[in-house]
Structure formats: structure tokens, C-alpha cells
Amino acid sequence: MPTPLSLTIVPGINDSTEKHWQTRWQATQSDAVRIRPASWDEPDLENWIAAVDAAVTTPDTIIVAHSLGCLAVGAWLVRNPGRVRGALLVAPPDRFGPDFPSAAPTFRQAEPAVLGTPALVVASADDPYCALGIARTLAASWGAGFVEVGNLGHINIASKLGAWPAGRTLLDEFAESLAGMVR
Image (cartoon, rainbow, N blue to C red; front, side, top):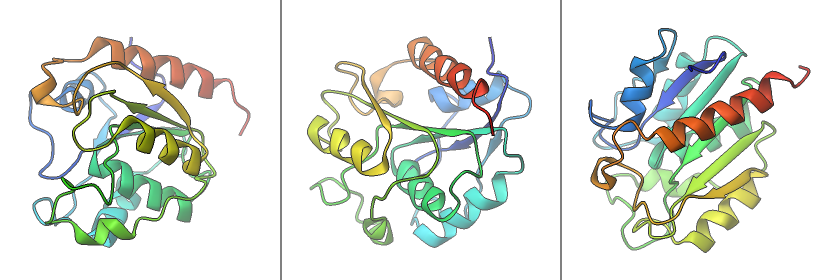
């Protein structure tokens, strides 16, 4: 069952292909919107923040971010607290980890701070781009909830999740908890 709230999809570097769970979720919800930064391949934080800003058209939105997109959404939410219902932040990368994309140096400036919006960080125990403890610390810095989903790698196409039904259940449960909140 699609969530009753609109979705804004914020993929990671290079966008998400048709096999990625984000793209599959977007296909199930007619009002879902995907960001369109000009800098997919050489990500610029300010460009991605502007792309999130342009994509969010209603306050009844949940942002669904993956990887590098989590950092852009975090930075956008710090500037725009309460502008959306919530954010599902899946597999955020460690900004200072050895495998952080060298093509995205401006994203290292995305200093985590309390988001001012309900958020849920979803992390894998064996994510090569972010140790579980770092992901948990990031969630705490954002004032977000935290869910560890076992060994799913970077929770991407390489993880062979397909439409990732367990993740969709997390999203739907999160959306249900937000739908009852008074704005």
C-alpha cells in the first residue's frame, strides 16, 4: 500500500537506476517527485540542496534519501525545519570515511545538526561506506530515530534487494506514525 503522504526521492551520486529500490518505490506512487540536480556525477552540496528545495512542493511530504542524498537532505532540513512531514534517510555515508566519493568534496561540509523534522536513519551492519557506529552517531546528531537492518551492504543495487519490501514496510510504518501528528 503506498504511503498517503507524497514522496520526494533523493538518490545518491549518479542517481538511481530502474533496478534501485528508490526508483521502484517512485514507480508505485504517482505523486512521487525525484530531485534533479545539475551535478549528479560531480555532486555539489549547494546544487543538491537547491534541487531538494525545488522538488518539495507540499508540506505533506516524506523525503526518501539514499547515501549521499542523506547528507543533502540533512543540510536542507537544518535550513528548512518543519517544511516536510519527515525524512527516511537510508545508508548515509561517513563524510570522512576512506571510501567517501572524491567527486563530492563539498558534501564533507554537511555538518550534522538537529533536523527539526521527524527522521529515521536506516543503516546496514556491513555498509562499506559507513560503519554502524558512525551511522548511529549521525542519527543522534540529527535527532533522528535509528533502525539497523542487518547485513545489507550499502542498501543499493549491489545488495540485490529488488523493490526492498522490508524497507517499504519501514517507510509505510514511519508514514503512518507521521500521519497522526498534528501540524
